[in-house]
Length: 137
Image (cartoon, rainbow, N blue to C red; front, top):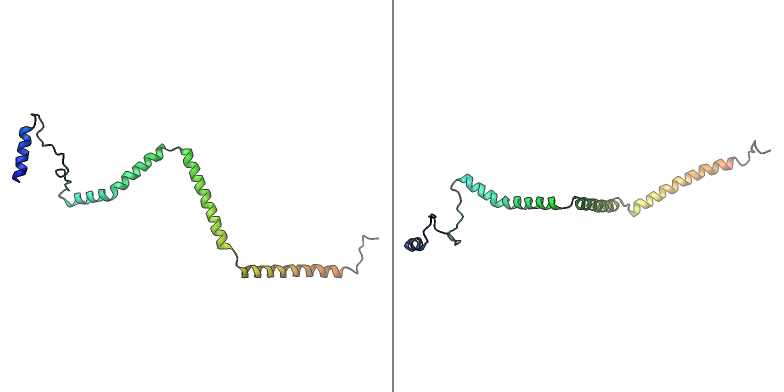
């Protein structure tokens, strides 16, 4: 402690006369961050340390967005919407793709329907072969 007092007194003696009474603190050791003594103050400091960076970066982002061209921003949003739509369509195609068994069953059902339709039509035609039209004289 005596060396500190000696240094301070030497600085005061060698300093030029001025109205400033404080000693210049240029070293980092003298500029320590002092936390407040209350618990609430410590909580505020901890909150600022945790979330203060995020607030600063958010403010910087907002300033950058204000400087941007709104037309470019709109074009970028449109492109992102298109890309998202394409990706969703591809995912839905993959998800809704039918398996081999489903395709086989579907083809069989279609063949059965077509065969029933052709049977009805062919039976009508076969029954009408012996009849004569009233229009043909």
